[in-house]
Image (cartoon, rainbow, N blue to C red; front, side):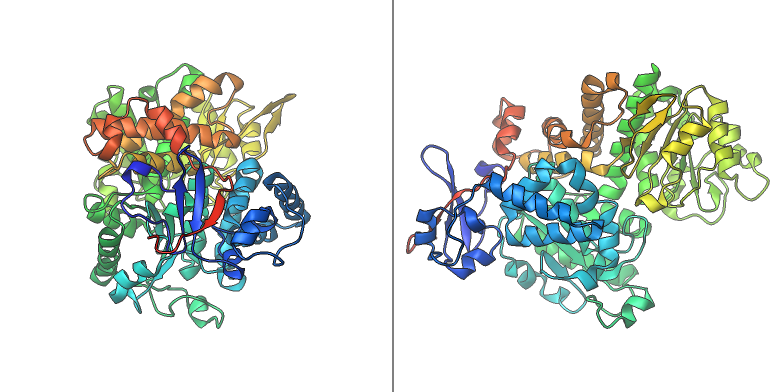
Length: 586
């Protein structure tokens, strides 16, 4: 089933099957494979849930156990099996195996146990899975482009067994989470992100494609590993790299003209270069830059609301000037400007540090993309070295908000956190780096060092912190609160471009949802089980903004009940009736 049935541009979902609707609007699947082949396609396979009639019509009699089971019974069996595994990686591998065996059952299980399984299919476990990707590999999923085949990009796209692609997550694996270059192993990230597009954002898995852009790896250990699955060469750079990306984008535009590309885990230089090069050419965004920015701004806005304050009154220090840090700096600046702060004043209220210290006018050793985040030259006097350190910046700026996107574990030391508490009564402190091992500080320590006064959120999941007899939930500033709804909204809008306003709208939509439903309960982010509700809200708001920005297209422009339409189009993992395709049907 394609999202927005009215905008479908091809008649089939796959050469092997098509999703259709009868006269009463009931979904069914028409297939042209039978027997063992039907059991091997995860989109078709129901396992023991095939009915007697389906078993006869699809030549499955005798190939399955006699008992016919419901999805609920299958869920019970699957969850029991999942729970029998002890390590997160074993659980990850079980879920991946299930995804390749029975896609409807996989998503039904993940949606039902989303809070428990999110850390398994996504951060932090997916980071370990990427490290072990070549050793754990069992099933082919998605498309792989490399220097060996990029010249045949159109053929590769044509080889894919799904024909109506609306959402692509593509990575070159150069900056996976906080663990860096993983070579081909980074393919685990697009697979995981697209699982969340479906589980949290209602995007049909039959309209998605994970993509590995294998331009090489600079890790000699991977190049020498006999089991490594990727190209054994150093990474492409410069003009050669961009030409590779152009061939990929051109093939997508020609073959899947309605597809949106989410750029994922590109190194900081490539992230900004690719985004700027292609954002007006193909509907696309970078989740590390824009998604991270949107979810962080939302948490800060909710924290300000909890304190009865405004964003414009805060002094924000951002540790980390990579793709995520730059994205956060950009969107917080824009948020302050919306509240009336001048662009000149913003430079003194949003301070960004890289590994060498504070970014300021006149400092040497800076990449071009950092130039827009320079603090006034006068800030140089705060430090004894070439650039003020994090501690010096926190002291002299009198920071009230401290955001960690450095990937440096333990960077928020006790003296720094205590200084934040000295600057204001209730500091906002978000150690956001993923995975958990890269977190700048543990929430429990931040509470202890601020005597329970800090408002804390993290990038990875943490248990509530108990302080003076009360449990405090730790908000999870997870991009999964943003990108599924943003992407779903862009798909449903038939967006020609994802504008900055659409990114901002996603952030404010999340904030409004949190304030309306959870702020009174002490939360600055919703709980994970509410992700589908959040995505519904975000998608609706994003569509509205796309229409206002004049980048929407198709029949969505005539829709009166946007939220109702979005809810109707959310994909749910319900088994369709499966029938054989009639002879001669296209």
